Amino acid sequence: MRYARERLRWNGWGSREVTFETKGRDREVWEFVRQAVGADALPSTPPTPLDQIDLPAIRLSPAIVQGLGGVLSPDRVRTDAYERAFHALGRSYHDLVRLRRGDLRHAPDAVVYPESAAEVLTLLSFCEKNDVAVVPFGGGSSVVGGVEARGADGHVGVVTLDTTRMDQVLEVDPVSHTATAQSGIYGPVLEEELAARGFTVGHFPQSFEYSTLGGWIAARGAGQLSNRYGTADKLLVAAKVATPRGEWRTLAFPASAAGPNLNHLVAGSEGTLGVITEATVKIHPVAESRRIAAFVFRDFETGAAAVRALVQGEVGAAMIRLSDADETRFFGEFRNVIEPHGGASKIAEKALSYAGFADKCVMMVAFEGGQRQVREGFRRAFAIATRAGGLFVGESPGKAWWKRRFEMPYLRDPMMDHGVGVDTLETSTEWANVPRLYRAVREALGGAMKSVAGGGVVMAHVSHSYLDGASLYFTFVFARDVSSGLESELAQWKAIKEAASRAISEQGGTISHHHGVGIDHAHWLPAEKGALGIDVLSAAKAKLDPKGVMNPGKLVRVGG
Image (cartoon, rainbow, N blue to C red; front, side, top):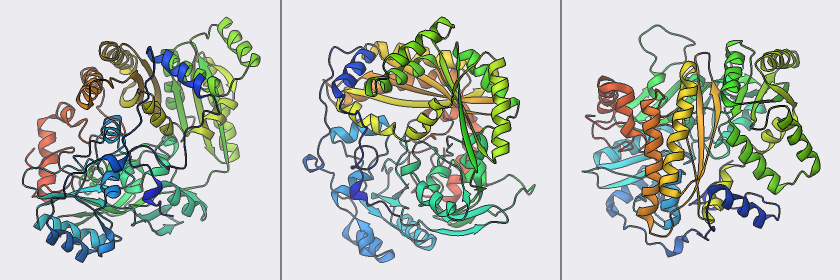
């Protein structure tokens, strides 16, 4: 299945046919949001229609456009307004503000749709020869500026290379439990084809419905069930990468001591070294059973200690997710505005308050696998979580979350329609540093939003966990500065982002756990990798992409 691009929002999330459902309670919902962000009123801030936007002139000469059509076919070289607008930026808050304001200065000059690794190689050779920058693009769900259609000095134009016509499962090996597919295959299509043969990759990021296999690997992504199935770099067995210097392959060994594992250079390369065209990944039998237990804790640090106990106790969970008190409260109240639960909910809340859980933090623990395996994991998790101070509150909260787990990206568009900004960032650190980093980033976000937005909401959860540490995922909601133009609005966001990024860097966190570097985090990379580390990455880029045509401005540049 290929998504018809015209059915997708060029300036928002997902399908035009899907909206976030408020169930007829719009007035109540937006009054709740207004109070939460501390705004006097929520303005109407609809996006600028595409037909009212002047796109920049195409910089590529007719000869180059014709040459691209000769490499592929003319119908797979697109220069129309919709295609250029759709591929101009990703889907970060920073991107959406510009898209909605009609700022398409970084629209690509053309969009090309190859269908094979051979075509990609020929395209890259052509573009390098003609000094055309190439931006690889899968689902376009980057939230760090990873697919912004930028060129650099010396480039005559920018071509976005859309991989989504490379969408075939090429091989499934039921003995080795691996599958090989073209990189542009969307998550739902990959899972559907594997499920028909009894397997799953098990990689379910929140962007799952509109992200691709190659994008997962290029951004070093993580899915919601990564405790069981692993992050994208752990799933990767082998890859084919088309570069301006030719095809680079890694081979499918279960393990090898023949030097460093170059898969780790492919994963996280963000299109700066080449285009991932095929990938072999680990697969697992489709689970027989799934259960999601929910517990509440009196505070975040107690809950985090319970997450650590579960992981280090090796209970075999597929997911452990802990929301702090503000996230628990905000989304609980938000959902109750849409679907009022009445007296029963109020009685339950009072009972929890009397028991000392007034500022409760919800933890969900999911298990997948054979029925016996799931039953035993559930039993062990119950014992560990309750010993750590958790109160079991049933399986209904987890089932409700599972049902709605891909809905939340659709909420951002109506939020922005009402003058409200929503953004996220994530990091990870070792367990001993989790409490300190959590407090520092919360304080940085809260202080910055108070300064530039008059207040707002800061929420966090533990999204992924390991024997030695965990990822912290922050969501912040604030009243947008919509009165003074685009630059003022972007400056507001940059002040908040800068404060949080500084706190992460200074307090021992990575600048990104699974969103990647792109443009937004590039400034912070040298402090994390060190000067020699950046030199190593730059040397790899210089060797594979000597003219710097691959995704300029992201991650690293030729020569540093």
